[in-house]
Length: 233
Ligand SMILES: [Zn+2]
Image 1 (tube, rainbow, N blue to C red):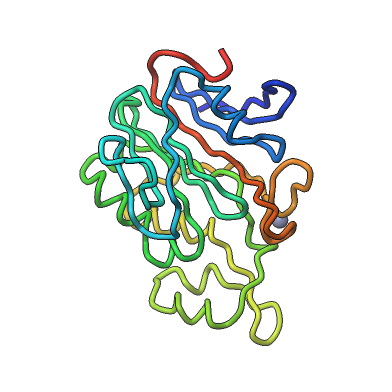
Image 2 (image 1 turned 180 degrees about the vertical axis):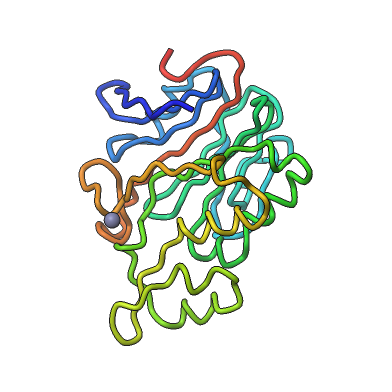
């Protein structure tokens, strides 16, 4: 698998990964949704109304305004889009690059097990899939209260993702929770990669809700299967 390639499009920065013509990536704080449409002029962009759920739609099930937090492409054509600003984009694709997509995973999605829903949906083919964790707020920057730790108490990985920092306060490591959950669903460790970028630690590069507040700025995380047309080409 290739490392991300930092590109510019109309003077704005983005990161693109290529996996034998499968493409996925994430945009910088500079990008607007209009820029994203210009990046893929000939392809439909599937945006979701993201609601911190466990719901995953295929492109065939998608409709404008659909409420869900995951998209699964099963044929070339459309671009799956997930918007984030600290929550985690989880990209996935199979070895033949015939199916792939992206999930929106914040603490609510992790608590509801959106990654387990995906694993169930992929079924016997799960072992053929690779996963990539995009830019998100990392454990050392994400302070939460005790009530959140209590909500996760039933998860087998709970004690590995909450680190106490002072009475009643913890750091929450969503990336680790996701990796541990995928591993216990049967995904091999070498099939799970992480960009290692923290949104909160990257001012000027990525928006961060925790750092900046509600500016409306988002990262556009995109994935498209091999087919006609390439990003920025
Ligand atoms: Zn950070």
